[in-house]
Image: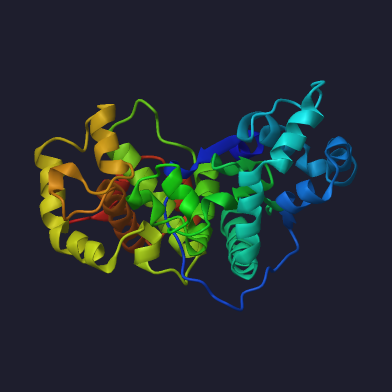
Length: 330
């Protein structure tokens, strides 16, 4: 897809959802993983820029974004850059985070292998070039993912475990913290990549456009990671998934009768689509993001009814046509 050739994207933690059950013996199929956080700590600050440009030329765009947008110390051409980078490397919190990552090294290696395999599947089904580099880094609790042509960056410090003391100190809400586990990394990473690959819905579009788009992303993520459960795919508990199944018909009726489907009101769209402890219109027992779940159900019905493949799904950006052809009737 041509649009992926020019993409430069940064996705923060709260924009992506999902997870995966770990497969303890999974190994990367290709050696594309670059542990950038280790490279930073192993290289003298005054040598890092030259080392990247000499030995990791493909990572120069990533390195620029890391400096300027993630840890925000400015371009490496600034006179004070080395001093700023030294401050980052010697920061006590960054060093504590690096130590915590080391404690989960085997688990992270496993999850990165799962991501590598899933990205290979994506390349095969979408007929796009393989991702050349999977780059891990310490973001300082900023951006979780960086997407560039051929490069997916992953901020490991946002996946240290739901009980990590850093997250509580930062005031991250409990319903967000509960998903900040290493096991959640593969689906979040794949979703981040898909957000950068699939043509986005019109920003001035209606609720249905966003719902179908999210449904497509989640449907494809599930196909790329066939071992995941629905709980991990949606960050839902078994109880919340059961609630969605039991209330699916009434939720769909509400969205139709209240004219939510074709609403272009941004606040209305956010209410049903974005991370929250529950969906206000459906009560405290409901999970957040029920619009995403219903979108997934519609897209699943569309794929089953049409018999089309994922490439066809990617290319179809007509949400109304997908809804009509899905014959979705909960």
